[in-house]
Picture 1 (tube, helix red, strand yellow):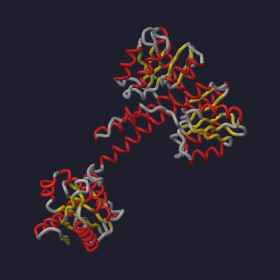
Picture 2: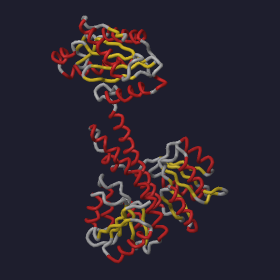
Picture 3: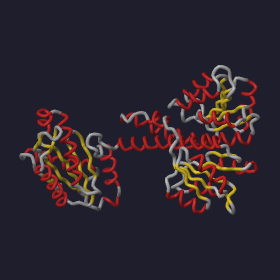
Picture 4: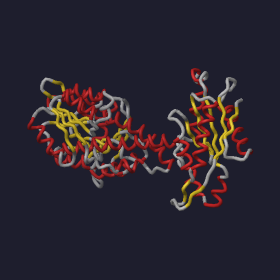
Length: 457
């Protein structure tokens, strides 16, 4: 997988060295010799991952990372800090600023390439979510990137798969300061627990007695219930080949024994924060999709949804030989309600009207706001007589129970006129059936309103 890698280092020879290594692995590269230039490149969306030196004059790498990760526009870009600093406190400081990993100079090529590939794959998924989630802003739902970037990564549900009692106890005690931890020594039980639970993260020892921890990671990645759960491998120095394989098939991170408590907390927090970042974007995407087919005022489906699904019912050959009916409902003298009591009262009537219609239709029916005070109901598997009965039931319910408006301070008597039609064998499109239902509605209005008129053909 190719990617655009931004190399940030104030020493040109260091930049050229990394450029040469990455070019041999078919990565595209661009360079920045200082922090402000690096931030500007990230804000323009010109890179997929950042390799960031820590020791730079002016703005150091820690500050650059902090600014990238705190900006909703750039928070999703993976940052790997590359430095000669090798103390646990240095790694912790980098991870606390939001860095996704920390490589020590001289950089091991295998570690570099596997980390870049792993993080680029994760970013590709996040990019897709970002683009779709941003559509939610068009529906007035706020900016999902701001919400996602504000995630703290704390109070997570963490599964720890470790069969060394002492190690499991030490890690669990450290994690329990900020998270809820479930410890499981048996890998088979761990699979069951993970599938049934809703974990934000799993840490898996690679050296489980009688079991390959890397295989357990692979199983977590393959199951639908656990595929989105971040994974951190717990490894020994001799496990580096397995670490590389794990990163290649989608494990998110790793910790080397002996485990530094602060690094454990920092890496766990990073993975939880990244998962929740994606969850927020995914939720915004789902909400925007729902908003795209939902009428905001009434909560019913909108005309776009109606036309799409009705066209499908007409196009599907198996449905052409089954009965299908349509109702068009229009509130009588709705303009007078708006003129007399105000548009807010009119909106209250529309919402209550939509809810009553929904209560008196079936789960298989399509109920959609057609425009203004008109609602269309599509009735699969219903003939003209059955559709007429349903329409009468709705009409009676609207007529018999007054509508409460203006904070329950006033009751309004409301009636509805309804046109009914069913699909005919000669119909080539939904518009012909809807036209007949609309003609029935017109006749109901002309005949005095508050009635149902069915059009046979």
